[in-house]
Structures are given as structure tokens and as C-alpha cells.
Length: 334
Image (cartoon, rainbow, N blue to C red):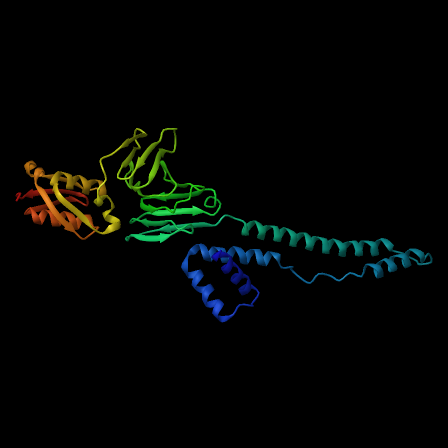
């Protein structure tokens, strides 16, 4: 694995055997993540603990035994002290045994650390990011979302990941290794398909399937909802109930595609989409305008830009109540 390569470089650095090119690679690895710096510190600590604090005493066991025997046979000595010599030999042996035991314990610590599951985490801030897992699965993370997996739970027999926020998955099919996404409230299981999972809302978990078959289930309880292409599944977190939603549209993935498409779409439905996708609370001064039909392609993933474009097309004014609450004033249908 790639991480093993960097671990070997860390040991080279500790032993001062690293080349200049390798040091450049290792410095870049340190800068890439705080976790990499922590790995360096942990290995460094284990390395230091494994080094003896001083030179081990050299013991000539035969010579020391000979001296002890000489003392025991020398009966005319005024104050024979064979026990002192025996104690000295035992003391040396004990010092060696203690040092060896310390090395064994330190080695065990290093092995335990090396065998600790590797945690991989992907996160986004103010932009959408895409990446690919080792099994070939492609993932797009929406803004302010994250995904985490452990080497202990992502292997040839199971592919478990943890997700917060919203993501689109194009899962590499493997019937021998189900792909399982866990959120704080739900579990989604697939073999190979394309779909999105959204837990951005505090009240709902939503799954939109573009192809294949997906199982949506709450973390607690045995109920599950099977979804196929173009179906939407919703888990209501208040009631812990599952239900199928309306047919998904391309705008459910506008955050990924960067495009909103409306084909003779009623204004009321556009307002509902903006509410579901961006958390907007939009009301109309003139309720009759809910029936206005709009056809447009808006090349943006930004909800506020879409709202401004729709308002401009219908000659409406936007009154902002707070960050996500708006009233549309005036306007007319065409």
C-alpha cells in the first residue's frame, strides 16, 4: 500500500539513511494531512522507546564463574565474599534480561501500531469534490460533506463507508462484497449502481437511484425499502418510517452536474425543488403565479442564482427576510 511506502521513508529518516529525493517526498506527505504528521510522531516515539538507553554490558560468563569458584576455594582469606561476586554476575544478567524485555515490549508496541486499521477520510468545504476508491467506485461529495472508511471494514468481503451530508455514488459492481453506506440514521446497501444519498436535512434521509437497485433502511428496525432506477426513497427521521417519493429529476443532482433544467415546469414545483435542494423558504405575494410555466436551462449549481434568474424571467422582485427566507413580489406569467 502507498502508506507502507511512507512508513518505510519515516524509518529511513529516523536512521538518517534517507536520500534528498526521498526527503522531498516525505515532506510533501507530512504537509498533506495532520494525520500524516501524527503518524510520524507515533513512529518516532516507538523508535525512540525501542533504542537502549546505554550500551549493554559485556558479560564473560565463564570468566566470572571461574572467579567465583576461585573465591570459594580460597579458605584462608580473611573476609571471603563469594556472594558479592555472584550478586555482581546476577546483576549483569538481570540488566541484559531487562533490556531485552524492554526491546520485546517496544517491538510489540510497534507491531500493534503497524496493524492498527488505516482510516481514510474525505471532506469538502465550499466546493464539490470527486474522488475514486481503491475498488474503482467513484464518489462526488457535495459541499460541507464527508466520507470515511477503515481498512478493517473495506476489504474483499465487505465495503463499509460512513457519510455525512450529501454524496453521489457510482459503485463498482462486486457481488461478493456489498457496498454499505451508513449515515447517523440510515443504512444504504448496494452491489453496483449509481445513486445519491442526502442527509443534509435534519428531518429526512433521501436516496435517489439513477440505475441499479438499492436498499434503504433505518439503523434501528428490520424494515427496508427497495429502490430501482428513477425511484426516490425517503426515511422520515421523526417517525422512522420509509416511503417512496416522487420520480427524481435531473435537478436533484444539479449540485453535481452544475445545471438546472426546467421544461414547462410550474413555478410551484420550482419553489419546492429549491426548498428541498437548498433549504429555501419561498412564498409568493400573488398565489396565482404558482401556475406559471417555465422552460429554462440555468448553468449553475447555486440555488440563489437560480432564484434570481426565475424572478427576473417573471419580472418579480425578491424580498429577503433572512438568509434562506424570501418573498417574491409582483410578477406576471407569459
